[in-house]
Image (cartoon, rainbow, N blue to C red; front, side, top):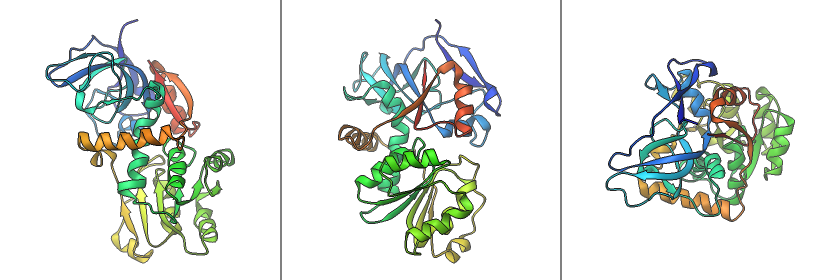
Length: 325
């Protein structure tokens, strides 16, 4: 079977994704050719496809994959052909059977981490590490609200937060998903409508609210998230699953209790090889000690990426989704 990639020539719904045959790439200086064994699906992929995030057209999709190095370019010494590697971030284009990518983006996989697990967890796991650590600076004893707690990032955040000593209030889109969040270790798991959420959170916190909200839902959950925070709480808006958050007036944050607001991007936190390696080491440690158990809730053939996007946007997925070339 010939090598191929998934591209889109115009922005829109999942139907704009099409298959395109490609030739085997030659690595330039500083690059490595990676044959993908698994490709990660992330909500940010739908943002580029829909046009919410700008990208060049025609364009590829995907920023996360794992596989085996086939060739390296001049000057590459950190990795070699045959190495099992993964990456998260870098140029779009992971929706492909193989690609050439800057070798500095690659992270070697431990023997006990499969390529499917790596593709399922690298971007989401590094995001969880960033949110709990450098971004959220979560401390033991704090109370944290996690939206979409049964989803790809949420299902990693819940046990990670518990491991650092936080109390977790999980919110999910259905009772079944709330039960899953509870099984992951959440102290409380809710599935109520957003217009009831803040009241329930306040009731669970003695009327105070939570220290931090991790919100990857966006527009639909924004008001509930703000209302669920305690005075001087931190609102971390890291995704737009329901659409982009409307413009925010700083005075509104003051009126809600002198709140803090951040909209982090992972790649500002892993901008250097040293930062990437340190974050990956923390993630692999969480996998090794059993804190994180990666659930691949569903897989799709890579050439059915459009079907995977439909399922993701309809909130029909649980855990992580992997595309198999």
